[in-house]
Length: 93
Image 1 (tube, rainbow, N blue to C red):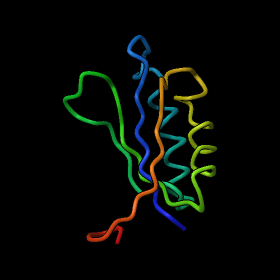
Image 2 (image 1 turned 90 degrees about the vertical axis):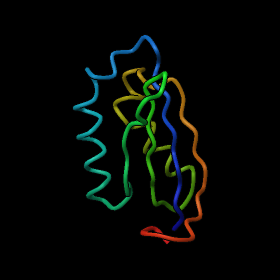
Image 3 (image 1 turned 90 degrees about the horizontal axis):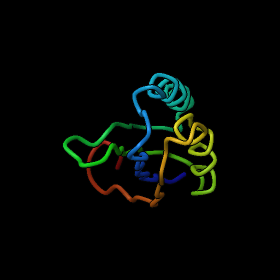
Image 4 (image 1 turned 135 degrees about the horizontal axis):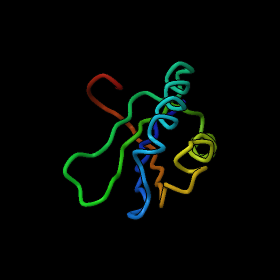
């Protein structure tokens, strides 16, 4: 298993707050399943955006989880990037 850092960028014209409860409920199921380790919005950014850290076998698995997120399903997510991450120190190492 590997860790993956995912950055979400939400559409500027989207109502992120309207989808947030459903999005967070979905993410809670991923936490319970051990797939999502931590997530949260960036603070003080020009655009609504977020960071999510997943543990998965590969990037394709992570992409499937993103595709099933209500933010993606409802067209709120403008883009996402998946980067494999190798923590060296701290709680994920």
